[in-house]
Image (tube, rainbow, N blue to C red; front, side):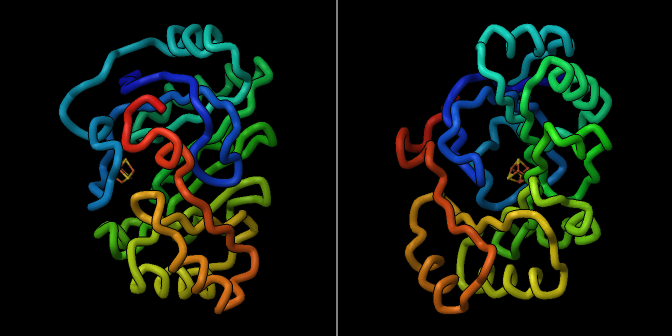
Length: 213
Ligand code: SF4
């Protein structure tokens, strides 16, 4: 597997925010979001090649039963990611897969022990045409659909998408950059956006823009 980094920290985003978690960040992505904050896992060639069993061994050594498989786009390494998820599930791990919303996760991620965190790319990412809206209805109540919102145009886009493509998943609105969220909160309350959670990127509030946290 092409691995960018493996580390232990707090979950910084989404419905499991604040939970101690092991992160397996895989290298490589076929999108180029304008505000991407993990470009070191997208291009530049900074990765280690590890076997699935080496990754499992490293995860086990960090002694935490919650694992976030992220990237980059983890599903570009689908065969290895499937194998990794199956081994971790068998070992009693709880998995969160972070994926960018244009590739269908393989069946193993629809297991009760896995949460799929699917992105819906807004216009501010310049990648909005990548989203496969058909994936939304495949998500369950345990999963989440995340909109990273840059400006008013993104907010209105997210509102329209949710109207046209309902989902059972938890919906998260997260500001680009992770911290300036008051204006999103005001709009969500004004528009009574039921079922939407407005969340920061906790790791940036705690540690700033650092890698490996
Ligand atoms: S999909 Fe994720 S990793 Fe890829 S460019 Fe966009 S934000 Fe970065």
